[in-house]
Length: 417
Image (cartoon, rainbow, N blue to C red; front, side, top):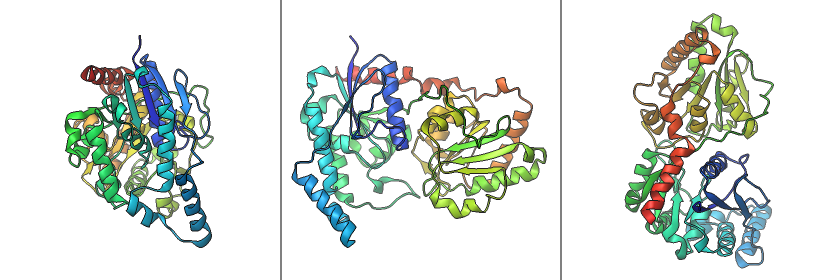
């Protein structure tokens, strides 16, 4: 009989965020490893994942939290009075958060704990509603893997992202309890596991590194019309959040074009996804046809772009020497087997995985180094047959595979036996 796993998550709609994309890929990988997977989600519409049983946690509406949340939204909309700062500084979370957590709890209580060997809570963005819900259900704690995709709360983000969120003290108290009561803690990154254990020492003995998974959903998907076939295509897909400036990349690509006359006719840089923080910067390059900026495409199209790229980009913060994050896209970039240009700090999960000897990596603000790497990649691309143009990292393909995920899940199941 296969082991039975319950997943509790905010969303399984891959179009709504990078976190949801990663969660869907995680679930599909568990299914591929022949686990019996049940998913409780909070999308407020029915969504199914092939091979899994997906159950909607419906929002509770006949209760005080729902009513208070509605009053809060109405007052803020009509009177311009923002109560959220006072409320979250007092209680840690909004009325809506507490109602959402209780809605998820209600759905979990409809299940029999004896039917599951493991419960995994998956987060999304700054939402840890599933973790909050399971925390209120002690009967599940001995089977609980609390998965943490990014630092939490936000005051634990490293420079340059740091800021103090509303309800920071209460959120810290909440995560202290998560660390104390979960049986296991899962992190996509070794650096993230160590970083979080620095704030919550109880994670030290409970941590398992479970990297983001690869999701192959690109069969039959057409490439966007702006993509240039048979060219030297440098592709970045995803949100360019504040702190991850593309300035060094843009300057480096311009230097590369100036140094390689032939490349000007067949090289393109694509930044595909939200980039509102850098609109003014990017507008100064829009006149050049080799720079292609697009606000976003579907999830499947973004994966198709990565597969069709000559080189895939990973962009992290430039004004820092440390990044504990594992970008969710890295799993897919590795699996499509195209060279990766990693613009990451020297102490980062991306560089840890690629290794010190990996040639094509640079600090994100080193435009001269980026230009040099692009020139090397371009000349290598010109002299390599298309069928031989690969990343050639079977070690990383193994690391991001469902087989490695299965190994980690088996390790913690054995530890709980």
